[in-house]
Structures are given as structure tokens and as C-alpha cells.
Length: 249
Image 1: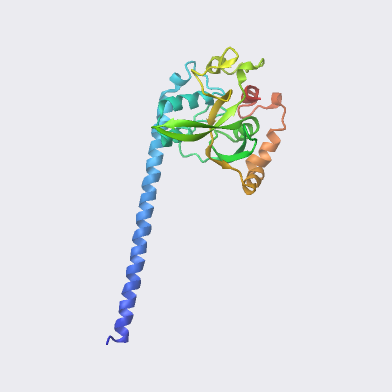
Image 2: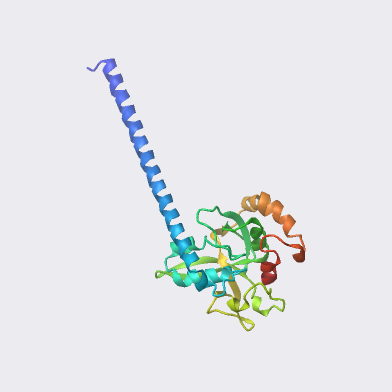
């Protein structure tokens, strides 16, 4: 028979082995996480440089004002892998047309679905906070099916009304980018349901009441946007100001 001390030693060895195994698993998981983060960051840097180096291919005259639609179309044509397509769509602001450096955090927003009018929550990457207010107030979500690498994916696009029928098309925006007469120029930008696609809503899902409450009471999407959205267009002089609003309203 084993002595009591011997059994205690065996028990302590088992406990040590169990703790060691757990530490190894935790360490291994952490290393994989770090590797994935580094990979995503490196991929984002490469994608960012790719867009920056293609600036004058996307914007021949250099004018990117409110031209998120040009980025979306360019990425859609160039990138056939859905995961990479989503990563590219984190690197520009659909409202301003500004590039966004990789690693910047996204914001929780909701937009109304164009067909059902239900609120769709998701993540949006903005260059500055006023663009969050503008995208939530003046755009909607259009769901569409797009084929990537032979697989059909549901894409939640951010859209605005056809701006080409407007009499007060903003002079700061290159109309030729978007329009062919009064119709959307589908050679240059993407059209869905007669609407202009300006960007992509990440991780889109039907909003819960809790999520809507959170967004409505957020410091930016709630309080600051409430102030901004009540300022007359001709008094807006921060963010894209009245440029995008005139295009989208």
C-alpha cells in the first residue's frame, strides 16, 4: 500500500501537470492570436498602400470629395476574395472619400433598410465623427448578392438616392464620377435598385432594441449627432460640411 505522503506527492504532480498544460494552451492560443493580429495588420498596411498608390487611377483629377462610391467600385472590380474585399472596405470613408489608416476602430451605427425600413446595425469606419451623423441620417442599406471566387455572398451596401437627377449637384464633387446625364454611371460606380452605392456596412444584422438604445445614447452617435443633425446645411463647416449632404439629401 502507498503511504499517505506518497499519494500526496502524486496528487501534487498531477496538479502541476494540469496547470502546466493549461499554461501551454493559453500561451499557444496567445501566440496564434498575436500572429493573426500581425497578419491582419500587415494585410491592412498592404491594402492601404495599394489604394494610396492607385489614387489617380481611382480619382483621375485627384478630387475625392464625397467619392466613397469610387472606392467601392474600384475594390469590387479588383478584389474577388470576399475577406480581402471586406478588409479593403475598412480603409476609406464612404462620406468624405478620405483614406483611413489600418487599425482604426469602427463605430456602431444603424441604417434603415431601403426595402423594409427596419433598422440594420453594423460597424462603420469613419475618418471623423461628423461622418457618422451624416451616414446615419442620409443613407440606407441595400442588400445584394455578389459572387466572390465562385461563392455567392450577401453584401450590405450603403446607398444614397440617385444624385444625378439633382439640380443643385454640389460643385465641389466631380459629377462625371457618378453620372451619365441623369442616370448613374455604372462604368465608374455601382448601382443597386436605382441607388448609388457609396460603401459597405460591416457585420450587419437586424438591430436589437438594446443595440438601438446603445447607439442612440452614445456620446457621438447620440448626443453629438443630435446637435449636428439640427444645424442648417449652410451653417455646417466641419466634417464634409454640406458637400455630402447636398449629394445625398
